[in-house]
Length: 210
Image 1 (tube, rainbow, N blue to C red):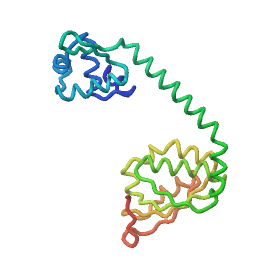
Image 2: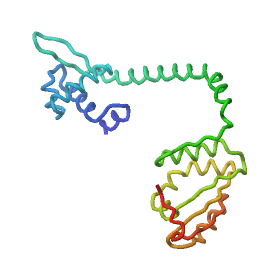
Image 3: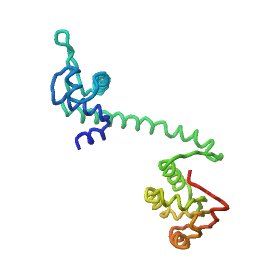
Image 4: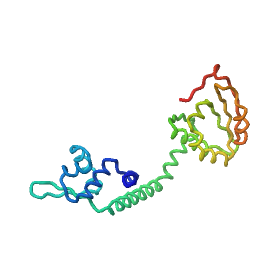
């Protein structure tokens, strides 16, 4: 659970192992940290350099040996707060130039644009774009391989986007295929979601996902 939480704040699995080993050992050589973290020595050198850059590890010389010591755990929170402040500053800077950027955008926003999207995140982006740009009552035209759509589980992942579409009463006109033939149950249920369906035989028009 601890490694998972550190991963969520931006540390890789090996970075987490090396940091925790350093934290537990106190001032140590790379060899000892490597053994404790169960990470190859050469890799540990590289990771420690990353952790030094992050401000999570410091180094000092004692005789001819170099020792590394983990910074206090509170340093992680300090780093996140620094990133938060940097992000706020960037947001502020973008807000300042946004009116100027929008002036450029206005010059070409009415021109036809072709965009390509891939994967589930791309599909979510398409849905978001539709919901934000279309007016109430406008129509989305879709080709749908119904069998593939159901097997993929995409419908569940698009649940929030669908709710946004329904709020704006944006309609959909769908041409769908299915190897099982026309699905009257699907068509009846779709009507509740402002969808109008047209079935075409899969053998004649084999629309496939991807």
